[in-house]
Image (tube, rainbow, N blue to C red; front, side, top):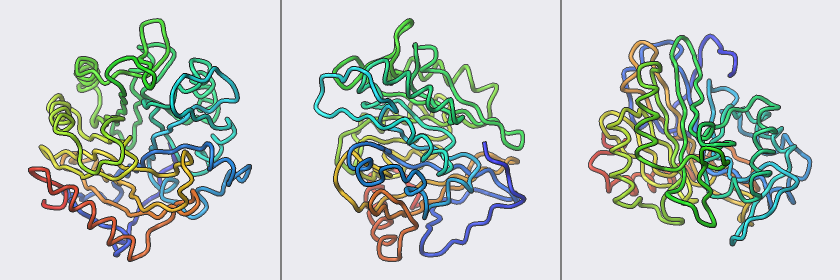
Length: 334
């Protein structure tokens, strides 16, 4: 966790869009950042090589926030047995320095690539993250560890993170078991139990889901139903990823559901330019719900994110408004 400064100030220009405002009265609210898929492999490795500071050189938001989170979609390992599947990703363990230098505090490992190099690849990932004190959720050496929350305490407010992926075992999914490593399965029973065990002891619960259809900007009806169930169980914020594109952001019972944050630094393909967004949440320690939500458009040029220019900002925000129009209420209508 980062040391808090006396005040965190955001300038709301065309480059950052405030879209849902809660009654933030605190001079120093708790600031959380979320970004989408990160794969430090393949094309990323060939371009970046050993310039570990390169990816975040023009992007300091993560370092300035209280807690910043990404979806780490590759094991950090030099070895391990590749799974029989279409795409297998692994990244050099030393790229954990890139995440640390960029201000990443926590990653979700609940995704379809973290087990690409089997149990050894996952274990090496956990070791690499532990060595630089980057927290992780959603995967582990057994089911208990995969479901274990990470809890940060800031200004007396306890903030819990959980993550889930997969509905069963297949080539892209290795659910953790009592004595076997893998990811925390996206089971309503697990999620309900985990939220209930946390609710009396924490103030804010964040759930990550790796889900949905790739390249689709609208979530499935089953996802919307599922997300509403999870909010009704007591979750305060849902963050989604996997489609590799942005999806809409719903407002449901004064809670935010970001169905997909798209790609962030994604070296799994050769595309050198992305327009995407970072989701920022501000929490008033005196009145946690409702909280303040900000969408910050981002350009990623050759796997290096930076604040979007005016044209890209308009493109991203217009797209998100369109994608969010399918919901009964979105952050753009509050």
